[in-house]
Image: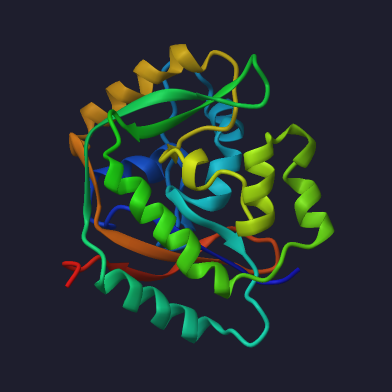
Length: 236
């Protein structure tokens, strides 16, 4: 299976938010290692481990450029340099207060839980759109199998257009910043306060700021891991 890359936001490795995300998911994408996993009261450790399998595969993050294979003639060193150059020209984005809430899934009976900004600022969408468009030249075209995995029959017209144009349906007007904490599960609304309480108990920062971009790599279908972090500069 081909190597894939993605551009994500991740908190700094020394932040309470990063430690919280890693202990909820049970893996640290900076180190690539499993970590001792917390689980909510009333949930068996094995049950919670299964409920977090999907986001654990990717690591704690917010998607800004979804996973892609490199276009012909492109390489990782060039992508790292392009990410650093792009980041230097962009200002950090203050997202304000954070909250944890259910996000609807394609199954009306299930939702996944995610940490999100309570009121996303317009400049967040500007940053995401710039990243999506800037790195399109680095992305190989989707194969028919990759398109099929996105369930195109369930997408609306705009999402399908974005899938064709950018390799991912949930970009630009369809973009919603979120840092996923569970797979799509039943009873997500009841779980949200438990996760919020844990975040408060471990002193997770009360507000969010996108201050860096991380390049993630996936080899041979394995877990995603951080290979480079580029701090956002002052926009000069």
